[in-house]
Image (cartoon, rainbow, N blue to C red):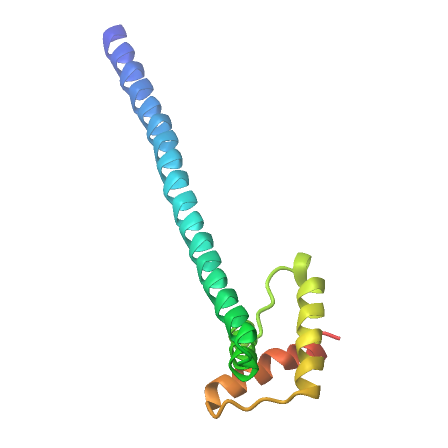
Amino acid sequence: MKLICTKTFIGLGIFIAGIIVGGIVSFYISTYFLSRFHYWGTNLSKIVAIEENVYVLQCLQEGQTDKAQENLEMRLDSNLLFYSSGYLGPKKGRKDLLSALKSASDYRAKHPRVTGNREIDEGVARALALVDKER
């Protein structure tokens, strides 16, 4: 009887140790891959930003202000579309976001833009309307 209890406790101990080791290994593997994914996403966005900045600067250097302005307008539309769903994220950074949306709203009030693409135009309008909605 004592031998059965001892084997049961040893088996239970090995099982619990396996769960702990498995959890630790899973945590480190998932952390490794998530950090790589985050780095890749951040790195890619920086690469795109560099290319866009170089394009705009080249256009300005060559006197092609219309192309530079159009690129910047498209980038503004793209960034605004991210918020077109109405979700502003956690309240912690909302003040800064609303300030940026207010700047974009003021700019677009002075310089209206219609792309001709209904989805883009409506999405940008929804994002800009968040400024009034959150007041």
